[in-house]
Image 1 (cartoon, helix red, strand yellow):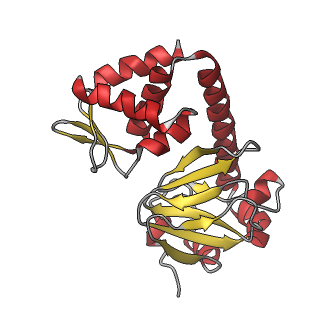
Image 2: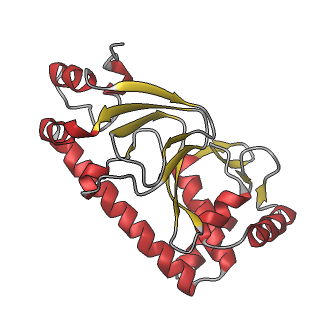
Length: 231
């Protein structure tokens, strides 16, 4: 099935490409709908495709050598992911799971060199993404070694507000389901600790959780905790 170029034309990655070039690029793409909770690919699996997220959210997890599962990245609409070829890998370094019902485009890994050659902006974007992931990894290591747990949790939740938050009359709602276990895996702590912190925040009117998407009722208060995490 041919993919209409208007589906991706609004994305910064493709907004300057000529129609003919974009059509040629999309002629190799396949659209895929990913139900919530389903894995797009798994850690260690042969990297046969790379992807562009059009709709939804994904979380990328890794299992460490000591068996601990951590969330290393949240994939947002417009993000490339699964580009193992750019990392000189033949397998996927993590598992990508749909945190919400999602739609992605995929291309065969073997066309990655042509993909980059036809779209120089893609090469820049890929390097920026790799750099961002390295910076986030360094930030995570620094936070885990030097910061109090509550401030680490505040930093993660505030970052999610900035990346996936929607303004509402009562605050900022993170635009996908994020569980307490997810936050624990993003901050290198336990479910019990995250539950204790979020329950205390709810009692203070800082956030509102439950079964709904997390609502930050006091963005300024959360920001102050997060800024403290960076000191």
